[in-house]
Picture 1 (tube, rainbow, N blue to C red):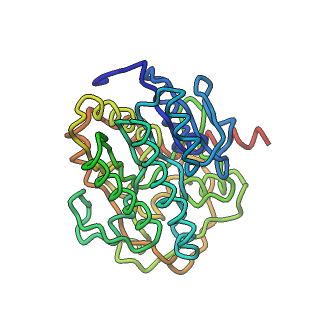
Picture 2: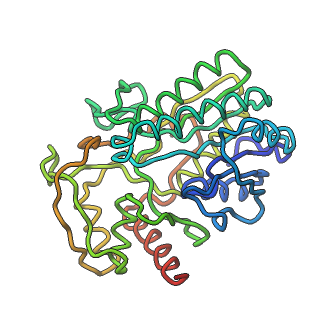
Picture 3: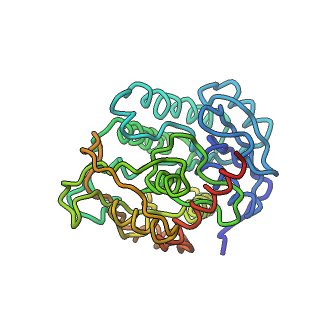
Length: 336
């Protein structure tokens, strides 16, 4: 049950032509919220923007454009997904990540404040925790990122915290664990070529788009030596965004930092076994050395989000996540 709905309040979704952003747009539209999407299409696709949303091609660093959009459309809330997300790339090219994820977010936050936007939801990450001492990791754990991606996101969280103290703005930073799957109705999914998400890569291999799957690191201190992650279905994640927005509107005095995960982890090899099982195809594994910036295990303590929002996962089974990702991958293959 939704906490509140203000149909006259329009939500600006940055990066709404991308993977997670397009799912959030669907969830917002399904819940009755008017939506404007801004995306520069550097990694997104205009066709991924759902019908019913207004699309504007542009850069979130263009403050004159943002202030105009906020005024023209009566924007009351922002969901911010735009940014760069590949951990190894952030190690190789840190300044790209500090520009796209931090500097541009600062411009967006300022535009929001200038335009009188009261609510801000930020796409953050479990990478802010670095290598946690206790797993599952709670929101109160130390935030000591081990890669520029994590730092770039943590800096934006800090800017939001400080801005919320200084201005009539509240925010929710949702720290994602590993996002996977696709819209169960087949309306959108992960479409970026060369994507690095494990389940995306594995289902591509299962239908012949890739010859194999590289397994990075087999000497971690885990049961089978491979890294462990908490995989969350993208549609469950999108639902959390809508509920977080409604919570911010219902209580404009409070801001939140919430983990988005299921509270259980699967190793790389366990995920590949799931893909084998769902596809009935034995994927070739190639064992590789560790990648820079990868912690051995990241699993969410999700107690706070369950206590704060009326959010209950609907598609939490690993095989179901894989099946939805597979269905989307097959639909992409049919498009050619």
